[in-house]
Image (cartoon, rainbow, N blue to C red):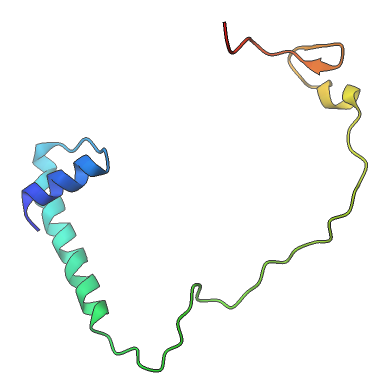
Length: 93
């Protein structure tokens, strides 16, 4: 991979890249892309496609309504509250 490609990738990724690091990154990215090309040549005939290496499902719990906090409990640890509401600095002036 050449230095200009590294600069373009850095620009697209919105990364500030010191010029001194460009040659080393070019070499690293060249090795990475070569390895990806090797993986592309692997014979995967008969290998089932997977999204995740472990066949696992989400363990969903039942959606059960439970009692929540009272207003007093909810604002008990707030830095500032007024009439059981959180008091925050204004966002729009």
